[in-house]
Length: 80
Image 1 (cartoon, helix red, strand yellow):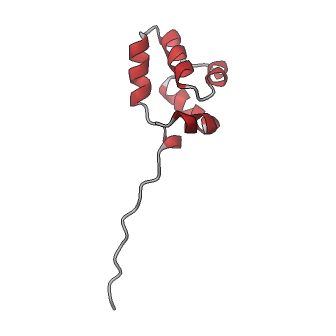
Image 2: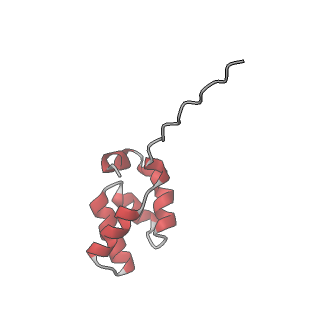
Image 3: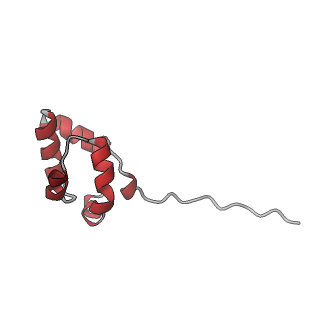
């Protein structure tokens, strides 16, 4: 995931973050503001897990807001 994009699309991503980590508050989400290290810290704090586990969860998380559009294969037209 590109965290520079995350900062720019944070408003769109908040719902996905809240769905993944429901213990995070709205204030947490405002504080995080698309910053990976802040997200990891808040997850660690709210869930009582190690920094490594929080990093692992964030690395596995793939928000729809940051997914790059997949190139569609061109369809060949049938000759009539």
